[in-house]
Image (tube, rainbow, N blue to C red):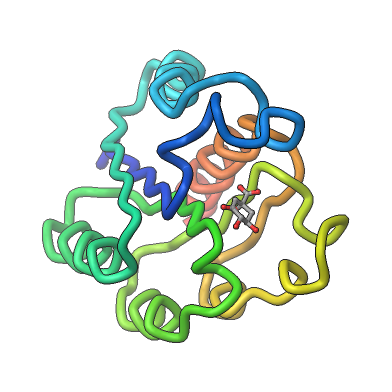
Length: 147
Ligand code: DQA
């Protein structure tokens, strides 16, 4: 049984630690990734970050075609709120994708309340800081147990 989980971070998440620490905390992206790995030592993680919509879509197709991963934990950043291309890409693959957000997007500006990807993701986790990623991994593991 596969032990690989892909974690994809979208635009501006490369700036974690420097960017709005009151919203996203003080940890860098490398710190966040390291904490995910140490929380699930039995799993193998592949991390990917890009500022570009197309690169994220290519990565989703790459993970799907490799047929090695259990699923994807995706923080699409602001693309969440307007990317129809990302919606279509997630719809085009069969791997489960869990949508995660560090902040509670529903407690923020109105433009963050809409997600173009929620309807094609397996589920959404929002508002638990870096723990949102851990809950996303947990969700994939539960899905595997129940399949
Ligand atoms: C985010 C929320 C988005 O609205 C925002 O554009 C981000 C990060 C989050 O993790 O809370 O870049 O996805």
